Length: 197
Ligand code: URA
Image (cartoon, rainbow, N blue to C red):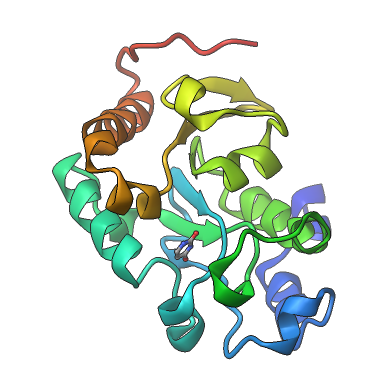
């Protein structure tokens, strides 16, 4: 049995999440929203936290932002069923506010377990909250979106959050370009930015 198997297992992850009361978000949640998609995916998408429709359904990215994400994934030639989609926090922050730092910190072990178990080649961070907690506390998405980083053996592609695209349609082309960058990394093709580190 490998160390990964010992430290992380899907059973352990789901057992720890079941009835989780590690932060105040448990008080108002309907469902714990763990993930959607392929647990063996080479590409992983990380969002911020569930919204109302995700809280009600238990599935990430099924609301308006999720519907736009689906459309743009298709435009980039990526099938949603082939990727793994999850969030920094698994329970809905009230009024869709950003998760507080202590809530994100409490949930990070679950996200780390998901990354360790899926072992994606490429992680797409959807928005600043994901990028901050995954690899860069000081990231400015508007300046750094699309810039590929190599961190601990993963390619990381930061991009806009799909909800931000609903308010700023002019960012949609850049978002699709970032998805294509992520896809090309898997295909071993060239990317507009060379990975650093
Ligand atoms: N926004 C997120 O960050 N995650 C979801 O699952 C839905 C909306």
